[in-house]
Image (cartoon, rainbow, N blue to C red; front, side, top):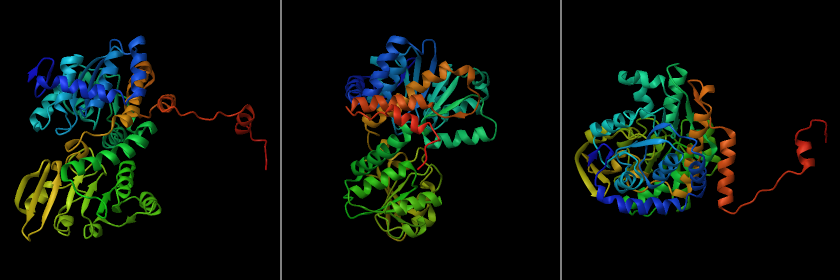
Length: 424
């Protein structure tokens, strides 16, 4: 239902959505503390903010936090299959946050919603894949808006890759903060969040037994590390495919078999692509896969599995053989299964990352928005890191919520670390 306050599937889902994001809020203590501070101090008063994020219960609590800080916020989806319709409805009805997101929306609606978010005339954007930033740079109707931007925050590895390329080419028109690169984001969210939620999506969609299964993980960045670690923990035999020598060596020393994807396709039963690149699983690989191989993607964009090539190879495509699973029947009698149309499996087939890990990512996100607004006069049109003091603050909030205390240096230890005179 489209109104000036948003475009959601069904406003009647709002009550259930509110219940779900309030449940998630109980597991996001760091973000709750940030919201309490924001409510008192209103550091974002007067800021117009547009966010293009996965519309989940955790995102709802981030948006509530930014609004509590005084920001005038609007939200759209960053992926057509990642929206949770009850959350979108709850944000519109109960939080008064215009939300433009419908699960399964087509390409035309998806981009209409992006434009609706930019019609809010934001001075700050939050991106999950750099779609808003890309439009601000490529669509002529936003030429003036780009010049008035304070900053943008980028939440994903894929988005940061795109933005660094823009920075390198000298075309970036305003500052961007690489929130994804924050230690309190990628070390936990990408590793533990992606690791757990990816396999959650696989299991919900297929109900397969991972114990004893050969799982091939394409990419051994932080997300790939998490998937490989969790798959092994469930008893899988894990193979890692990599292009980077350091990561390949790391995977080998972590105890995984490492080989090119062309070789791994002979052995794999479940394939998980998590690289941020295109055509990671393609025609030459499909031709070598076992009958019944299952494919999924946990990278941001649906380009990692070459679905078009697979469709051309298939004599028949069986849609929804299980919810969120399509079967591609090949001429030689084999069938290859794809989960979630090759889109983000943890959100297409499950609920995404657990709130406890998104707590750190979104506390970092909220505090970085405040930092960017406060430091806008000193920020240049480049990709900037998250400030160290924000990282330390978020980690300290999370440790306190877990009732964990750290040691402190003694005065003697501080002097020793600050000196050069002491020898062996």
